[in-house]
Amino acid sequence: MAPVAPRSGDAVFANVERVNAELFTLTYGAIVRQLLTDLEEVDEVNKQLDQMGYNIGIRLIDEFLAKSGVSRCVDFKETAEVIAKVGFKMFLGVTASVTNWDADGTSCSLVLEDNPLVDFVELPDTCQGLYYCNILSGVVRGALEMVSMKTEVTWVRDMLRGDDAYELRVKLLKQVPEEYPYKDDE
Amino acid sequence: MASTACFIIVSRNDNPIYEAEVGSAVKKEEAAHQHQFILHAALDIVQDIAWNTNAMFLKAVDRFNDLVVSVYVTAGHTRFMLLHDSRNDDGIKSFFQEVHELYIKILFNPLYLPGSRIMSSQFDTKVRALARKYL
Image 1 (tube, each protein chain N blue to C red):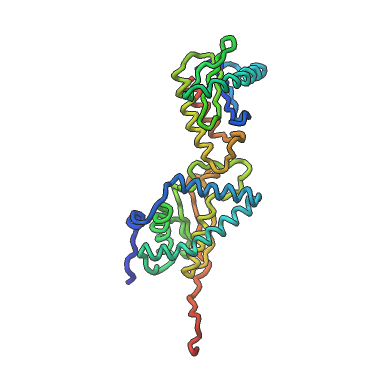
Image 2 (cartoon, rainbow over the protein chains, first blue to last red; image 1 turned 30 degrees about the vertical axis):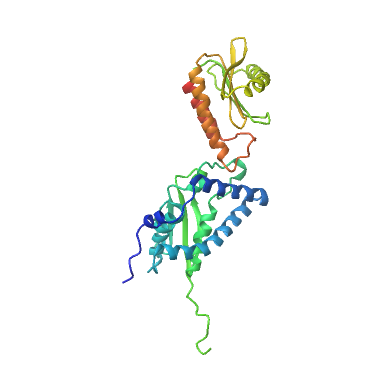
């Protein structure tokens, strides 16, 4: 039997370094603002945020595995739970809930009731197509890719667009088998 | 609630960024223009007083017939100006303080450019609610 992973990130969260929430929120806001000025197109900004998130995710996963003490997950369901309960808690200070599994267990929703990234934010008419938190989907995608899971992460609900929560749809496309880089006879 | 009240926010660059007629009196176009005019004229007086006092709330800086202009100057020199015919100083002060908090929230929105017009409908609704409560 696999060792039991910590069911909540509280313990880890208590030990990691933290920054002031407003500083964090405003810094992220400044990044989005700057992207909007530089790229002008809202779609481009979404793409760029996703790419930035991806770049963070592929690095963050190492930090996560090192500090959280989580071991290998048995299946995708466990992975989703760990992301929601430990991952989000550790890096964002909030926990998500995992719901809406489809029949074959390959896609689920991570629902965030509370999201520190969007304090103070209100979308003006000019940025209606913007997924303000698109960086998060990139982080999840990047992190899972590093542990050999190709995923597709999309926003289903967004509070800034008038929904009642944040919902990230995570769809497992395929498990990439780990490749041993050398041939046996070399 | 006051029968006449007109509230505007003027940015540090002297652009009006928010305007609302919050009185209970029937809205008349020419009255609105007149209110704007009076508030506009009061800006010069505010300019003189603001630098001679530590207070943010400057009450009754100017009057026009039975209408009085009260002003609240934020640290960033944004001016909240209220034209009113009531004499409820405490209410007006509380109104300004709460609007100040709302305004700070607007400023903290990274997608809002300081000094641009406040288009947020939430802000508008809340300001009108505060006006009903305090004026």
